[in-house]
Image 1 (cartoon, rainbow, N blue to C red):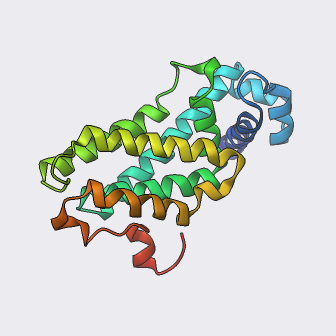
Image 2: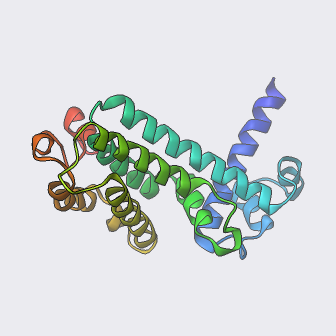
Length: 212
């Protein structure tokens, strides 16, 4: 049991270190020796868990995809209103990109040309937004003349933009910035019946009464 726990901690340390190095250097430039050094383990320990750099990158992306799944499921469970769920999930995703190195490293890999076609991370986010906007349309929550597909394209494109810009300037990922985005978008996206009940700053913040 002790050996298993030690192995699990080593594997997690390698994933954390790899995410940081991938976020800083990209997939091609990142070296396994740099990653093992960042994790504080030997190259032999790294190769015990991951045969090559590609398998390590897969593990980072899998962990990041799981983080996105937790974010979207929590927002959905907290909100019966689909548009508010998208608002909340967007806030939590941007907060995660600002503070969770595995999430940031995963998205860096997802946008890396060297790994194009191998990632499901961005696709997972896009499909969740599309499915949730489709539900909003079915429930009559979207503004007249706005389709779920148009709304999803705008939201996915905007969040991708925030993610990329946030690499160089973390203020792009701030709650204030994301709140302003939703303050501009929601009046065009939401039906008049539902607009007054939507919280651009995210309902989780309002419930907790503090910055998340």
